[in-house]
Image (cartoon, rainbow, N blue to C red; front, top):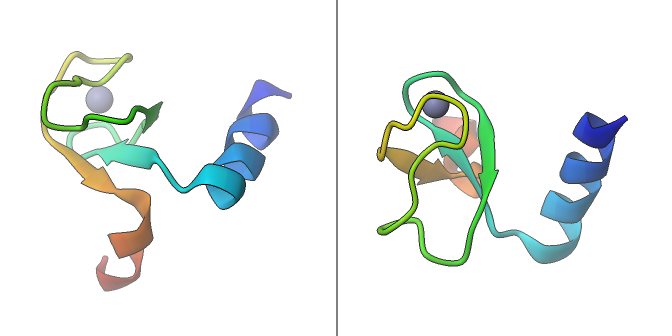
Length: 53
Ligand SMILES: [Zn+2]
């Protein structure tokens, strides 16, 4: 599944960002410029900060 592959990549590279709107994972090196590939929302947060949620 592509989903699992993404999670594995997140562990490897750590450049996964979560959409604040729909919680989709987005892989990017520049979250400031990127927007969610699913809904287009530009509010992305680092996956590493997920603990607070
Ligand atoms: Zn989204």
